[in-house]
Length: 567
Image (cartoon, rainbow, N blue to C red):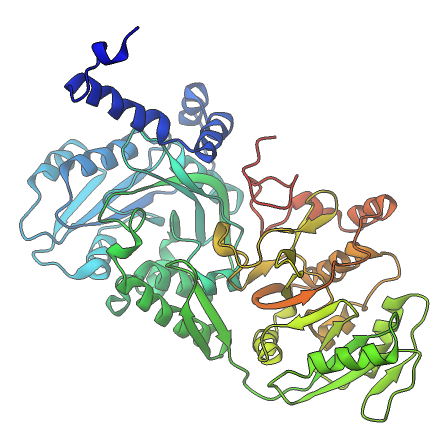
């Protein structure tokens, strides 16, 4: 068959077929194909959607979807309304505030056809915050959902929201996962599977974004949106909401489709460059209010992510514990010089060694169980915080490492702050431990280039995790002591997991600061012991049963990278 005869070069037929090929085949990367399979496997089919429509909830709250509109294209609006009309949960209302120069007349037919649709012509453009606040004045629902005028909800979105409200009647703030599309028929791509509420992650980037649902009383308390934060107004209201309530629930389902087109930040981050500058103000103001702390905020690797330096309020003493039990005295001196690059002066050095050192340093004799020795060293330490380093230390990249870690540790709700460890090949050794990955837990991104841009920029932003490697981490001494210190029951990676879970169990946060990167030799003694694995899973059954809350259940735990879970 001669393709050139059937479709001559330059012919309309050839161009049409080429367009179809690009649209439906080339557009799908391997990742998108996997996501398409995930959608088929995890999202409700027609039969399940029909079953949802028959569900009688104990509570059937009204959900007010508020949408600010401004010169909204008719096609986008038609599709938005259709996505609401297709919801399997029907107790909703759509509240529209129109800031266009003239009334968008095509919206009027919907208002006449459906009493659930309310329309208000403002008469002038008050900006995104002002227009949204006008839409909120129309809301009579129990909960308020935020929707952009060009985005869409899948048919099961409100059903899942109400299902969550029924399971958690005191919930005040709900958010979900999301993805992107360019047209109503797809393809869908760029899925964002989020962690459960993560305060320090939110400080580094507005990972919550869409779909956000507020209890009406909470929105009233917040006073709506603030125009001075236009561009990052959603970041501001989410941040303020988390200051007002801890009744926050994440639904790990894709309940929002973010439309990507040339004028949207979903497609083109340069469409609103000012938004990222406003985002810095949001972060500074939020941290000042919530932690009474000052921060320096600079741009992260990608627009919308930020590098944050938490400034030290006082001058607490830090104890650096150097484990020299396996090396000679001369090498211990080398290790001491490596940690002394610090620009933070209020620290002491404690050496674990069989060798005698001058009075400058406290010296502790090692015991057979090195973690018992660490407990003894912590007792001897005068510092409010401590760090343990060992013979694997090669280089600390930032002389500001102590104050950068203290800045986070000074938060009384933080128990430990880990650092990013990498080897001579500049490949990751440690940047947080995912609970339940490959057994009891494993190091995320082990073997990846140390500064690579990743999912949620986990190698480059400060964020919450369930566990970190306890060496090369800064630990709050008082919190550590309250948890009983290091246990005798575990070795290797399980020591780190047990130590961190003890902190989570008393509602203290575990943080990773990958901005502090430290070169080490290959980490020793981190293999998993099968017998220990049984013991630790039994001891921390509730944590393992629930799963790692800082790692989406939609992501695979069978490798150390991040990929969609297809099991």
